[in-house]
Image 1: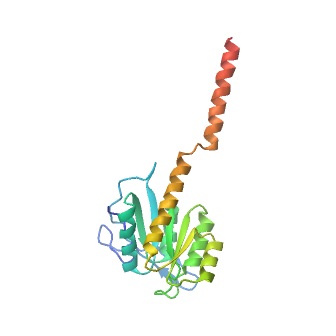
Image 2 (image 1 turned 60 degrees about the vertical axis):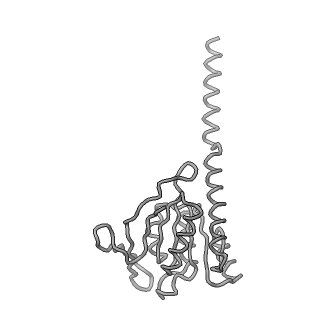
Image 3 (image 1 turned 30 degrees about the horizontal axis):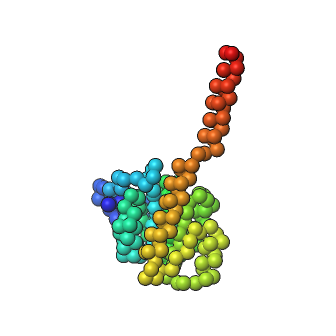
Length: 204
């Protein structure tokens, strides 16, 4: 199953670089991404599930992407090497963002994962954010959870297994919520029943 990949420094369909800019508090940070790629055609539940992966390690990102698609082929994945690039596309409202904590490991002035987490939850609180980190730190985990992270997963040998399990749980919750009768649907049904009863009373 192919997906849209938006790794930084990738050419677009016309071979040119896409250079959306974001003003950074310390200096201007330019990020680029590719809009070329194939969409996952199948759907999970009633709609397609969109997942963002944000990690400054391209090899790890690609391996994680393949792992997810191997276990959950019916999703669409977009990848980013900086949190700033992810925020530029967050209006697409992904269902899940898998976010590396140390995003400033290669770009020293880039925002780290905790800052990006806070921004995502401020803009779209319902987006599920799964934090990743090379460091198995209780303090870091607590900070992430306190700021709205759905889960915190160290980059250990079992990380991919845990990520896929978490994604399965999230997707299951999404599907259950979408199948459940919404309050406005209940109200609509009640109104219809009242109208039918009123019509019958008037008629007879």
